[in-house]
Length: 364
Ligand code: 13P
Ligand code: SF4
Image (cartoon, rainbow, N blue to C red; front, side):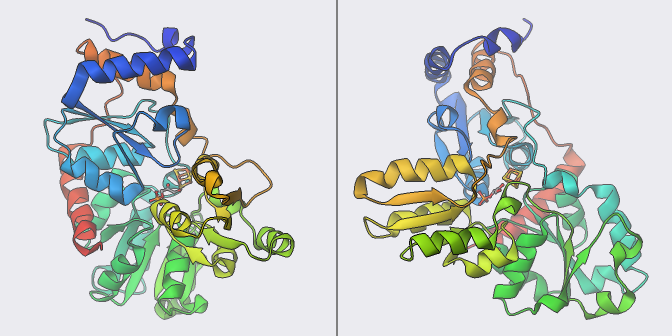
């Protein structure tokens, strides 16, 4: 039987999709698990069997016994699910175009080039631990696995950096400069010991002295959503509402994190707002779907949760996962067809798993 094409699904309204998703999930029973990242839109998020941040969902994928893991998130998350699950399990991303613009800012070719160029100043395999944020392609995780490195998420970046400095004196951190800088600074590393590697320039645009003096070499990558948050947005909001508590995801710029009362992953943001007293006011620097959901969940307690930027900043790639695509992949599974499988080749997966396992071992 051929897989049903997506086109007819694009014409379905959300309500019809809703009913068809529920029916398909019922028909599949325990054969399928649907994982949903906090940035997913509500029409999709409500169908998730488990929700979470990147760390929680990778643990969930590793623990799942389901035949099919349908990941409502972005591409690197489905890759991690494939790497950490058993070989006979199948990871599915409802829309394969749901990538991550930050993850795309580092590729294997440029990271290998950087490693070679760094070798003209020091021996990277004894002096530098490569650390990749989980928001990266599987071959970069494999690169870390092969070079004594490790993966991190926004939840465990501090533990991962502690582990890394316990082994080698320096870290090459990719792709997100902000998570690297924000975490390094809270560990007491001065800003001038964290240099930015511009992958478009020879030697990253750095001198040998800058490399020798650096503790962390930060890849010049960023999240297009979180870079929209600015410190003056905090100042003007606090002027109006001085009692506001400010909370930011560590992908936000350094000055935003410095001015925030709390900094942490999406799961941390959810738990911190939930633990706040009723009637509190929050200004939040993270993706809009999550901020709106937090407001809706807490408004009955008189709590208000505000989005930091005056501009609408959704993660456009997370938004690609819509009820139509979810209905499409699930109904195909009911019909015995796998569409939009994400599969990492064995050699890459084995090395990437090594780097992911190191992360899981050091995570709180
Ligand atoms: P979390 O690990 O905090 O869920 O972050 C993932 C992500 O992509 C944030 O932009
Ligand atoms: Fe990637 Fe930013 Fe979207 Fe997170 S919010 S998935 S880092 S583009």
